[in-house]
Length: 351
Image (cartoon, rainbow, N blue to C red; front, side, top):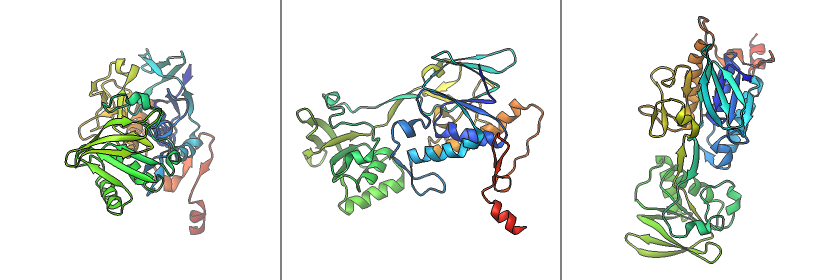
C-alpha cells in the first residue's frame, strides 16, 4: 500500500500545483491519474494551445505550462500512479482513506484532494450527417499540433474561448482561417473577441456569424462545407480541415459513486472556508468542483489548491500550529533538506 500525506486524484495543472503548495508545508503528495502522463487535458488534448491568463506569462503553451509545473514541484519528489483510474474509496478506522485503482493499486492518506478536472470526457459533435465518416479525414475535434495545419485552409466552428483562441493562433499558421458561429455574440473572453474582430478587419480571418455548417462534402476526405447563413443564404466553403470546437461532454466516472454531493456533474464544496466536500477530509479543487460564482479557470484552481492545503495541514497535523512564510524569504525546501533560494545572491549582497 502506498502511503502519503495528501493523495491527489488528477495530475493536471491544478493537481500538480497542489504538490508545490503542500511541499512548502513539508507535506508529501502522491498523484493518481488515468492518463499515462501528467498534465491532464493540457498534455492530452491541447499541448500546443496558447494560454493567456497565467500570471507572469503573457502567453504560454499548455504543454509548456505543464513542463514548468513539473520543474517547480521536482524538489518535493511526489509519487505517481499513472495510467490507472481511481475506482473506490474507503474510510478506515483511524479516519484515513484507502483509494484503490482499477488495477488494484491501493493508496492510504489522511486527506484526499480530487483535482480531476472535467473527469472523463468526449468532444461534443455537431449534428451534421455523416460527420463520423470524415473523422481523421479532415474533421478534427481537438487541435494537438498547430503545425499540422501549416499552409492549409481551415474552418473552425464554435463561439467559446477555444474557437476564438485557435482562430487567433492559427491565423499565422494556416493559409486561410474561417470562423463560423451560429450567433452574432461570442461566449469567450472579451479580449479574444476583440482580437478576432481586428484580424477580420485586417483580412487575416474570415468571420461568419449567424451561420452554421450543415453539410460536409468530399470523397474520402473533406473538400468543402455547406454553410447556411441567415442573411446570405447557402455558402459553399472550400477547406482542407473542419474543426468543430463545441467543448467537451464531461463525466465524473467512479468518483460519482463516492457519496459526494454532486451538482450538474461537479462536486459541491464549501468555498467560504476550505473547499472541502460534504465528506470531511475529502477536498475538491479545479474544474471538478462547484460553488456559487465558480469560474472554470486554471488560475482559479491554483487559488483553491493554495487555500485547501492550508486547511489540510490542520487535519494531517492536529494541534500543530503552522505559520505561513513567504517563499521570497525562505526559498523552496525539498524533502532532501536542500533549500533553493532564487534570490540568494541578492540577500548575500545586502549583507
